[in-house]
Image (cartoon, rainbow over all chains, first blue to last red; front, side, top):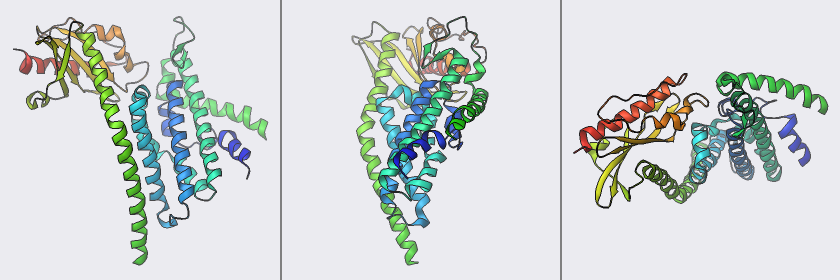
Length: 198
Length: 177
C-alpha cells in the first residue's frame, strides 16, 4: 500500500464523514460556523496523528486482550493534552468548542483508525493515515460549517458576505440544519466526486 | 491467573505514563489558563469602572456561599472601594454562562460582560451583543431588572437575568454598607 493511496483514501475514497459516517456527534454539533468546523477538524487531526503514531509504536507491546482500554487511554491522553493547550493558547476557540473537545475521546473515527489501521500497519503509514483521515474529516467539517454559516447567518469564517438585506435562515445554524446540510452535501459528494474517481 | 496479573501490569504501565505526561502538560498550562481568565475579568472591570485603579478578589465564605456566585472582586480607586464586580455562573439553554456584573457602591449596575457561553448560534448567543448587555447598565440593584425579551432566546435571556439578580442579591445583602 503506497502513501498516495492512503492519502486518497483518507480524504476522498473513505472520507470519514461523507462515506464512513463516523464521528457524527461533532460533525452535527459544531458545524454551525466554518471556524468551529476548522477548529474541531484540526483538533481531531492532531489527536488522530498522535494516537495513530503511539499505537503503531506500541502495537507489539499491547496484548490484544486489553487493546481497547489501552487505545482509549492513549486517545484520552492526547485529547486532554490538546484541550489544556487549546485552553491556554486559543481560549476563544476553546470556548466555542466547549464540551466537544473532551468528546473527541469517544469519536469512533479515532478508535476506528487505531483498531483497523495503526494496530496492524507500520508507524510511518499510520502517521500518514492519521493525517489523511484527519484532513478528510476537517475538509468535511469546514465545507459543512461554511454552507450552514452562509445560509444561516450570511457569512463565512465570520466575514459578512451577503449583507444586511439577506434574510438569514436561522434553521441552518441550528440542529435541524446540520442534518439537512449533511444529507445534501453527502448526496453532492457522491454524485460529483465519487463518480469521477470510479 | 498469571496472565491477568501480566495484563494488569501492562495497563498499569500505560496509564501511569499517561498520567505523568498529563501532569506535566497541566503544570505547564494551568498558570497560563488562570492568568488569562483573570486578565479577561480585569478588562471587564476596567470597562465597568473606567476610573478604577485596582481590583482584588474577596475571599469570603459568606459571600461565595450564595447560589450561582463564583467570584467577587472589590474595585478600588486609591484606597476607597468604589464598587464590586461579581462573577456568576447561571445555567443557560446549552450549558453554564459565565458573566460579570459591575455594581457601584451606590447600588447602580455599571455594566455586564459575558465571559463564556455555549448558547445556540444566531439565537441564544445574542446575549453577547452590546444592545442586549447595555440595557443592564444604569439600572438600580435594589429594583427589579427591566430587560427586553430576546425572541427565540428566552431561556438564555432569563439565565443572564438570573445571574445579574444573583449578583445584586449578594451586593444588597452582604456588600452594601
